[in-house]
View 1 (cartoon, rainbow, N blue to C red):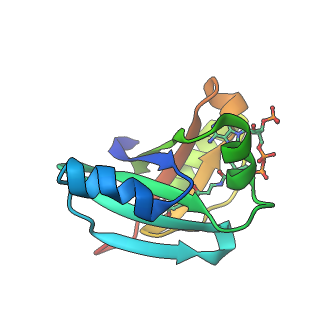
View 2 (view 1 turned 90 degrees about the horizontal axis):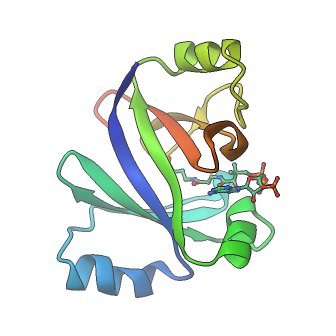
Length: 135
Ligand code: CMX
C-alpha cells in the first residue's frame, strides 16, 4: 500500500533564508514554490532523486504549523508517504484504530492528501499522498 517516501518536510521561519542553504550551498534544484492558502503555508520543493525535501513556512500565525514552529523551533515537520489508494489506506488505518487527523482526503500540492495524527504514529506527523496523474 505504501510506495516510497515522497518527501520529508522541514518547517522554517523564512523559505528564502533556508534556500540559501538547501539550494545555494547544498546545490539542490528548486522545482516549485507555492502558497496553499487552505493550509496556511508556503512550500518549496527540492527534488533529491526519488524523493524530495519540502521547505514549509507558515503564513498565518494562528495556524497549527505556526504554533508548532513557535513551540518547537525550526526542524523536521512531517514525512510524506506515497500510497496507491488513499481512500483504502484511510479505511484500513481507521479499522486498525490508528488516530487520524483527516478521515477523508483533502487537496494538496501534488494530489489528494491526509494526515495521521502524531499521537497515532509515535510523535511523527505522517502525510499520506495519492498523486494525481502527471503530478
Ligand atoms: N509533528 C509532531 N507533532 C505535531 C506536529 C508535527 N509536525 N504538528 C502538530 N503536532 C502536535 C501538536 O503539538 C499537538 O499536540 P498536543 O495535542 O499534544 O498539544 C497536536 O499535534 C495537534 O496539533 P494542533 O496544531 O493543535 O492541531 P490542528 O488540528 O490545528 O493541526 C496539523 C494539526 C498537524 C494538521 C497542522 O498543524 C499541520 O501541520 N498541517 C499540515 C500543513 C502542511 O504541512 N501542509 C503541506 C502540504 C503540502 C502537500 O504536500 O501537499
